[in-house]
Amino acid sequence: MSGETFIKKAYDAILAHDFERAIAFFEKAIEANPLQADYHYKLSVTCVRSGHLIRALRAAETALTLEPGSDTYKAHVRHVQAKVLLSDAQRRMESRAYGEALTKLKQATALDPLLGEAFLMMGVAHACLKEYVEAIYALRELLKLDPLHTEGNRLMAEYQRKLREY
Image 1: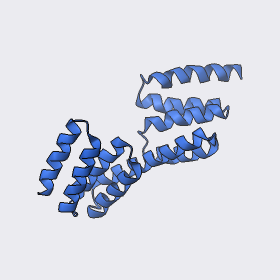
Image 2: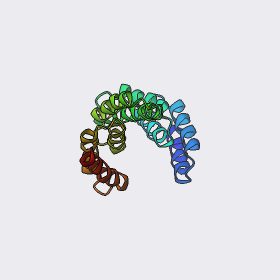
Image 3: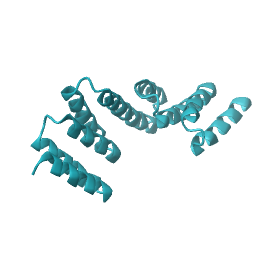
Image 4: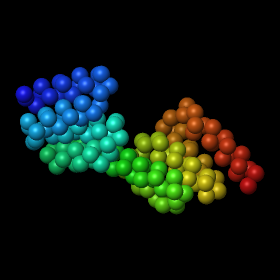
């Protein structure tokens, strides 16, 4: 089968909400035509959606290597790198290593300033350290991106109250 046939099968799998099968078809398309940057990019996007971040990063970097002038691929690599950092920050938050988490989150937002969940987590990390001014600032950044973010608005009110009490 041709690469395009596998791509069509991958999209059919996505429409059926079977992302693992879609990933397998994208990989078959790549086997059929390994120099097709777009196939690697599509694999990466699907891997991000499925939480396979390291696999997504490898595919994104391959797409960029094949087409180094692509602004889309450059932005996607930065986005995936930011998601990897966000995932690492989440693990550090679970271990109560808030300072380390904040370092990762700052790196993530530098790579992808539209990654709202990083600003949310940054706000929570600062609040865990009782750094309410910084927590409020991070949540303001989130709310600039998504003014109706329910959790962001709830935490903003909570941290503003805690700052007044502090």
